Length: 196
Image (tube, rainbow, N blue to C red):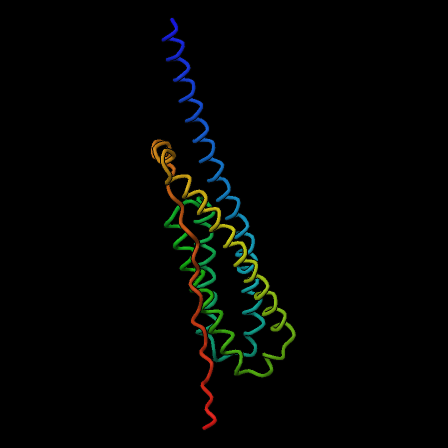
């Protein structure tokens, strides 16, 4: 009888231990989803600003149609990738695709702003300056949200990959999440100045 009670006690401890691990994994996965929701807000804001920016630029850059169309195409791809990643922020492929499409969008926006330098009236346009300021502010918020997301992913991945959690994670199909890395457009190199 005593050995049966000890056996039941051991089983109860194992069950409660397994429940604790499962709940911790769920909590970590939900932190990743919450952190992604913050990125979603900022990326959506960025995506919503771009059509207005393109409209403000169109009148000045009539000969740069290819660039304007490229910005819109990159924006649409980024919106599509964001929608896919929203469905499951722990999906590694969706997050990689989002990072790639946001990097392409950043590159196209960089090209647009570089071309706008050739149009003095556009540079002085109040709407253009306001859009650039709003985009810069949004980019900072995206960077902050991305850092919070990546921190959540690291915590979740540690929980999924550490022993003995990895046994429970494998049993309940908890997969490691992917960090969100957005390829930044190439930085312009400063011109070399020589006084010799």
